[in-house]
Length: 204
Image 1 (spheres, rainbow, N blue to C red):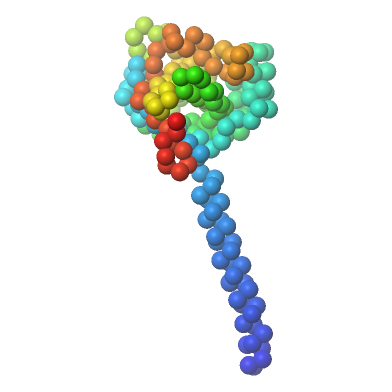
Image 2 (spheres, rainbow, N blue to C red):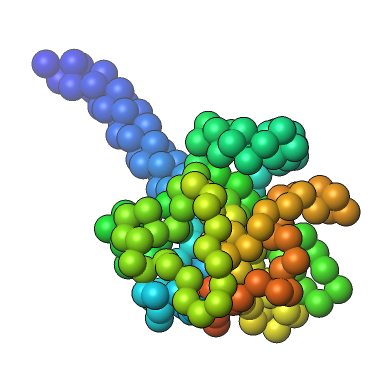
């Protein structure tokens, strides 16, 4: 009996060590697979304003994913809508609506003034509650079944956002990305935008 117990001792210790190692690895993976960026803003110039907006970004689009969407858009807006539905989920947009929106495109462009962040969802903002995202004022609403969001941040990390709810989508040939056409003329839809990276520090 004693010799049997002696043989079991090292085996049990080995199993326990394995369990601890797996637990540590799982915890580490959990910490590194969360959002790489967390963005907050408040809606403006829409019927539901002011409404909190949160964006949790898991990863940026690859060059291949970006080119695929650009190719689809070059064919038609309908092709782009279909491509966005098939694209992988890169993060989420959260509002006060009952459900969030999947990000299917995420790209960033450095500028002399700061940075442009461009996102696209496969559904139109307001799909869950149309009363929250109807444009107010003189801006005519678009008819896209999806939404492109363009946020622009200055070097101090202060930002604002505009969307395809009231602006046309175009291909920015200079930086090779989907973008809003005539950004400066579109009304602001998200104000007071702020960014935090995975470490919880402001992103500049």
